Image (tube, rainbow, N blue to C red; front, top):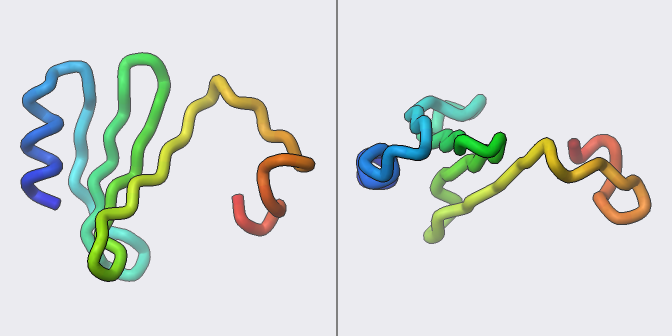
Length: 69
């Protein structure tokens, strides 16, 4: 996670923060200039990247269940 944090911090168009998940694991939060946000954290033997952007409206027919949000 440290290498993800430092690698993205050098790009310049992102605000990068290293924080802890609710379970105490490492997570890198990457916020872009256009309102996009990425959450990067280890998951088993892979790196999980979740993204969010305010430009996409929530559609209950397409976007899962309310308790997943």
